[in-house]
Length: 549
Image 1 (cartoon, one colour):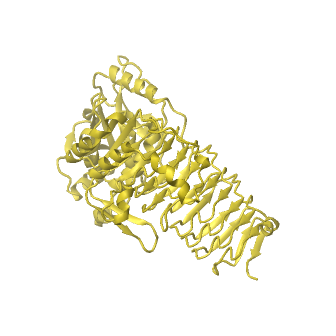
Image 2: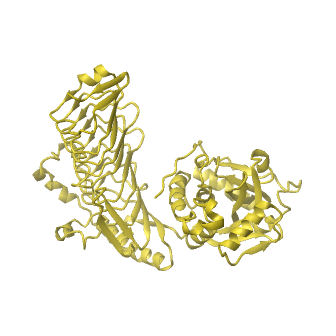
Image 3: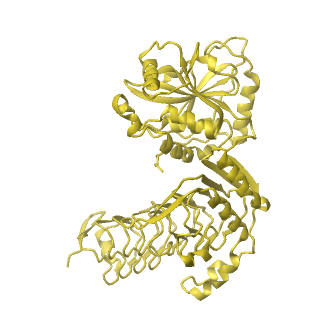
């Protein structure tokens, strides 16, 4: 999945307030009027003061963000999910090398209106079609017409006026021209008889008649993908299920897959701990015998959930990537986003998403939720037990701030994975996160962490580790990064000791240290702590320290 940096976020209305604003606009916008008319007979439309996440400056992600804005305005995703949804959409609707060749070479990387229409029609909207004015009167409109012709788009509906395409429940992902040649997308909609546009470039709402004043480089094409939103409560891509009804989930997911959906969000409500939590800090996670009690914390509800998710993943591959160390997962079925945010779970049970017993027979027949591509954890969570995420197809996971215990071997057989922590976390120790040759490929360490334990990332595919500003890290244990794919590291000034063979057999080529040369020399270093001839100096805040005897 392609990552997109965000521009900025501004405090917005609550989702309930935003829904009220939308309902009010639909209630009063009963009739059509001349394009952008502000007739005295029409009430002044209620301003939508929500400011959505904006795309990165000078990026080509506006089409994906416009789609995400549509889902937000129609109540199908939360504002907090815009970036995540846009990331996924962008990877699915951009012009590819093959579809942007020849006359359309310059459009490589832009969102393809054909794919946008198709994606929305089969997942989020009741209907989707490409529409444009009868006569191309500007260079921008000619570009749109040529785009449609060149790509063989069929079923184009012509409009007498752009306003003709709108009723109270209609939206348009509008294609406009920005600057000398580039395309840009806006989400356009009607409130109280007036057309408004939401611009992904800054996340702001403009009257369509005034947007060119704010952005002189914009030139309207007067066409785009017109959408009719589903009525509230009939969103096909969101499945809400009570914990007591998980037995029905597989049938529901299979029906969605049969209907052509390739991505759904499953939100589970009213799920509490199956067994009263123990004091996890009393377990010696370095002693296998002491971990036997964890077996009692398996949860049949998660087994049922695993069965349902795996039932719709289609054909899968689970191939180890020898070069990188992580597994390459593919699946032909439906992707799942699992939302546990409304549960009250305080721990995720032992081997929550893993068919652990089958592992004894090898990977071939093990049920692994490689199609579980997104996971939202509850704020009530305080502990993650061993072997929780074996074989889960996540590419990104955020650990809630109340989690203070993360046991060994959380990850295994996973695809490329970025791990981060919610702001405000108080976790102090990073243990061994993966089984051998698997685990996160990138991790962002919060300021609260003081210790990286022995072998924490040893023999793992870790490529990148980032210490957040204000890091309190003091200890890097023995073989903490031994044999990993780590290429460079920037260590915090708080560091006091580095264990034996901590960086031995890595791909390390550069070390920087936030402290001074004197502070670096004061650090206790174990035998063969570096073990890497490719690094000869450490760059400190006041100069370099040679590592050559």
